[in-house]
Image (tube, rainbow, N blue to C red; front, side, top):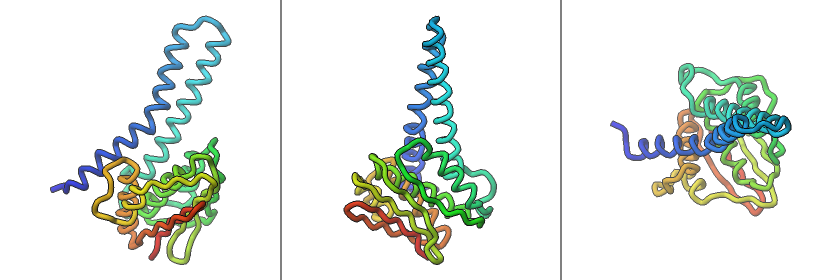
Length: 205
């Protein structure tokens, strides 16, 4: 039977998905309503632009979470690193982050690839004013480093990554908890180190 924590993870991750998609889909709806009511050519063109931009935003978010959370293929299948980097680049496109990703042509265990994607998303959220976000190989493990002048790391996310029993039942910590479980499935542990202007997430063999 499902444990209470498993049920909480499912509900909270679904809440996060709905939150991430609600804005873009709502903007598409607003654009359609404006297009239906507006007769001015300039305003109609603006509405079409809003719809196109919002639809593209929803599509890239869906592509990211489909790879990070979806069940396509078998759990033992590999995830090409090139696919991970392509989806991550699209997810962060147009933002304030300088994204550094490895160019190696290798395959990752699927659980590890999913964990790295979720960790990248969480680390990116810690840089609301922009900065540098990098993923690199670290021996037999991987390191994600986020650097910026306005680093904001939620205590709850750190607690969930650390495996603390009393992690807060909120969407972002739930994503961190799930990333930790995925890392364990690839025989890796997770270490989070927070400095004044840098956050380091290490996936250690």
